Length: 319
Picture 1 (tube, one colour):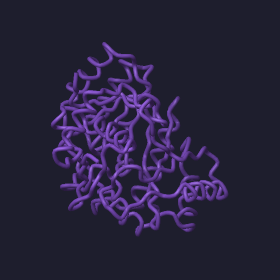
Picture 2: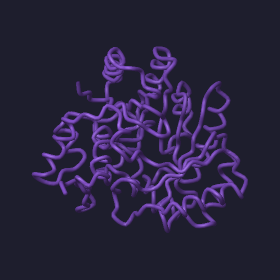
Picture 3: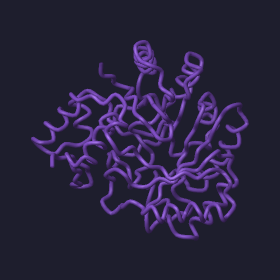
């Protein structure tokens, strides 16, 4: 059956087999990142609130696990910034009691980790993956395009403070993700500053990511592997001793867990008629946008569809 608030499970090189949890109905974020595969924000959401009934999410997870093997991770991600939800603490605490053997992961832009209530809400998680794409004001404004109340230094200090607090808990991990945008945050001075800040954090690994899906802004391009390797070596030379990964997505059909032929056919038939956005396909097929994105990734790599950007929105069409 299709679910409204959970998606997958999908394979992840970072997390293994991951069951996704989306705390929002539509894109809900306090950043407007240039690389976001959901396109530009319709509006900024900068205050925490209740967006989806948490009981519905718990019921869907319970229903899924009753008839499927347990995933390696239950991952809070999806179409918005998870820490904007006031229900995330309740959900994490409840899931940690019900399913203690499943890793609970939160992917966050890190913007609210200075908030003591957010810090407390995330304590039941097993793994928190904050992003730190920019360590200078110029790069921050150009890549993350935050709502004006989220000052860079406050965000950075929040990530450092939370990492130190979270790391004192037993069997907890912090992985820091850095999205590299060529020409913006790949220069030596930015990398030196990044290395200094990483050494102030209690993180278990650093992950260098780059464009692999259609971005919100057409000017964003993938970072060459040579650039990513160069940044990794520079971080090591500057004293970063934790593992540094270069993130790569799955690239062949056999690696997509639970791939459903009927969903593939429906996508191809839909985009053959007219170009469609990710949100359009999600609504039409009754599946979460992150799950649809997993199919689009494979179909694009196989040359069956292609993304096009029109008026800052991403559409998919049949080749």
